[in-house]
Image (tube, rainbow, N blue to C red; front, side, top):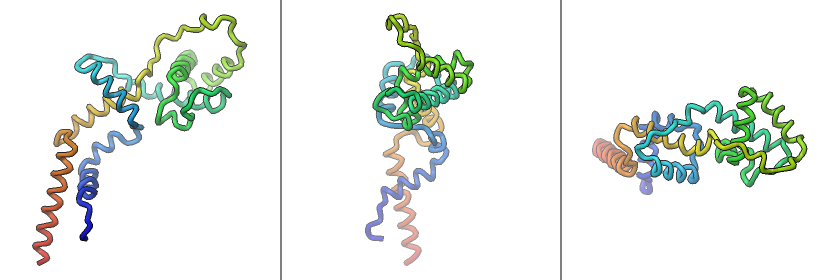
Length: 188
């Protein structure tokens, strides 16, 4: 094949050779914004002990589900990200914190939390908006970025040849070209 793309072949072979690494990241939404956030967290907390928020995965998933339900059915515009994309981009931070709080007081029962949220949405407007500012901690703040950092460490630990992707692709391409050269010699 005169126009054979060796770089694409090397990428394909790399993926085949490292399926165990790709399995680790399967289903994890990764976008540029989350990666930038993860880089910033890494710079800020490098070699520090930090809480691993991924132990809260099921609670995070429940809070995101409730946020999506509320944003879709609550009749309130919660921002520019459509609820369909909350799993990928994350819900608005304030909505996520409120959903976590409502789920917590509802003993993490989704139907109970939805009922509580509907009572909140139907409640009369407060007389003093400053009295409602009691939520001081969002347990899922930067959750997606922390998850990417932890996942990166897992991938690094399981990567047999280090993390120099460009070097690994070049080596894979060289090996493929050498295999092809030997095969071609045998054909002659």
